[in-house]
Image (tube, helix red, strand yellow):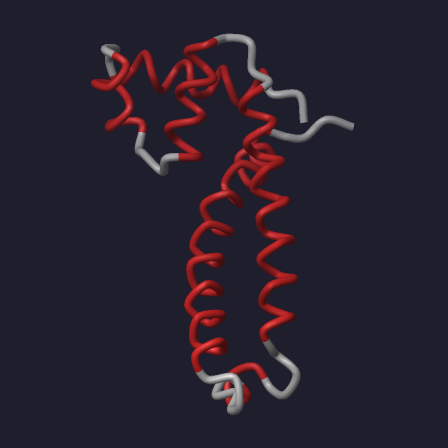
Length: 121
C-alpha cells in the first residue's frame, strides 16, 4: 500500500521533529554526564530516565532521520531532490528555496507537490 500525500509529508517532517528532539537529548546527556550522581530529571520523567535511555532514544531518532535522507537521496529528478532536501533537511520554506534555485516561487511550489507525489514510500 502506498502512502497518501499527507502521510508522505508527515514521514519527511519527522526529520525536523527528530532533529530538535536530539538537540534536547544532547543537552540532557551533557547534564547527566556533568552530574552523574543526581538525576534531576526524575521530577519531569519519573524514575528510570537515565543516560542510557537518552542514548537509546537518540540512536532510534537518528535511524529515522537516516530513513528520510535515503528517501530523498533516491529521487532521480535533481530539482525535486533539491527542493525536498532544502525543505525537509535544511528546514527552508518554499519561499526561501526559490531564489536559491533561481526559480519562481510558483515553479518551486508546483515541483514540490510533484516531488511529494512521485515519492515511492
